[in-house]
Amino acid sequence: MIVDWHFPKHLVEAPGFAEIAKASYDGVERFNDQDIRVLGLTYRGYQSRFFSPGRFSLHECIPYRFAHYVLNRVLEEETFAS
Image (cartoon, rainbow, N blue to C red; front, side, top):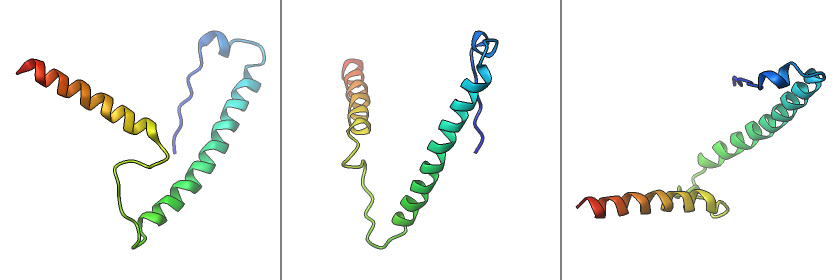
């Protein structure tokens, strides 16, 4: 995985930037390590004969709400365009 870091110039030039950057790198590295493990387990679950794909997870309402927001906007535009 490649991660690009972009910090504002004033922050890069500030005293103590090295510590700030290290904290950022370390935090993201721990987060990514956890994510990679979970993604591996998820992939294994997808290979199970018991897996049945669905549109959204029951535990994630935001993707569902966002999809419906987009659909409502698109359908509303189509209605006015007709």
